[in-house]
Length: 281
View 1 (cartoon, helix red, strand yellow):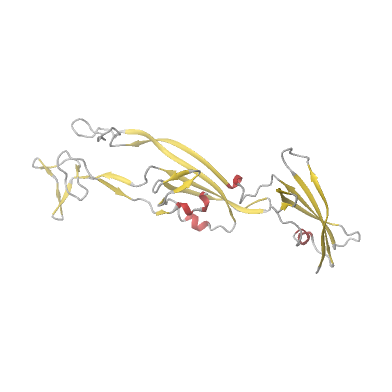
View 2 (view 1 turned 135 degrees about the vertical axis):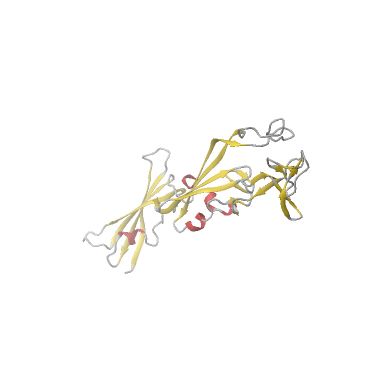
């Protein structure tokens, strides 16, 4: 099969429909020396591809094509390809909407606390230094951000899924907010089936981020025993073993009486750089 010619026949600007939409139509005559089909005609060299800008207005993009046979003898040698243009066409992979959506949420919850926020933080115990019968609680909660992006169908879903429940090791920016290391956790990831919009195949990925001031776990170093010459022995006060957890210095040794316990910090999650995640921006 050989192509004979591709010629533009007419050009018509349209103004009906949405008054905020700018539209246009172009017609092309496509001729072959043997019969062919409409798919070949509408994708022929010289026919505008989808999202191609109109020659007279770059804001109007090709959004629809239709090939119609025009042979009087019933053959399929000659075709008219009609190309529709609009300035309201949406590319789900490149346009800000619907390619990138942010949704913030704050959920209330109660949490235990053991030190207050006075100018000199105090341990929450009674005046004799004993804990209260019930553990003190305060209102807390979790800040959550849902980030929805569209990705091409060849997107590597496995790479994204392997980072569920990872915490950020870097400082990165999402929705204009700078997030420092150990403040964000990737708590969930949803990947849609392949979708189709305006001649584009894509997947929608929804990432769920949860935020805290710090995802490290911190505990007061308290216990009933201490290390003495590398051996674990009971902590003795007033010649008897202590009957409640006693402050330690962070190295397994009992603090002097009345001294605050050292803090021990643990990393409960694996980390990775969130700034490289394409499904967050």
